[in-house]
Image (cartoon, rainbow, N blue to C red):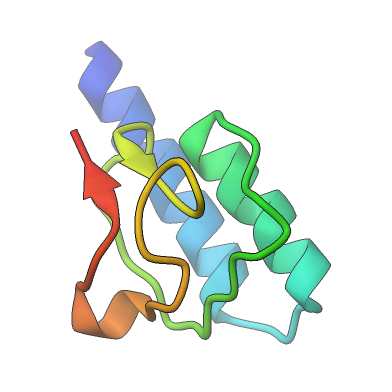
Length: 80
């Protein structure tokens, strides 16, 4: 399996977990941290559904982008 396939499979697993049941804001940030491999600032608020093909290239919050976004609208976070 290629490295990118592994990242995509992990992202699918985590976004399925995020999107298919209720989570507290703290739990959502924990899942996003696992998805991105980076700590997600406590100011970040995300309202699922959220989709990504990889996740490791995304940053949320004060040092990453606009923490007032929902994944559905594809706005304001830093991917790259």
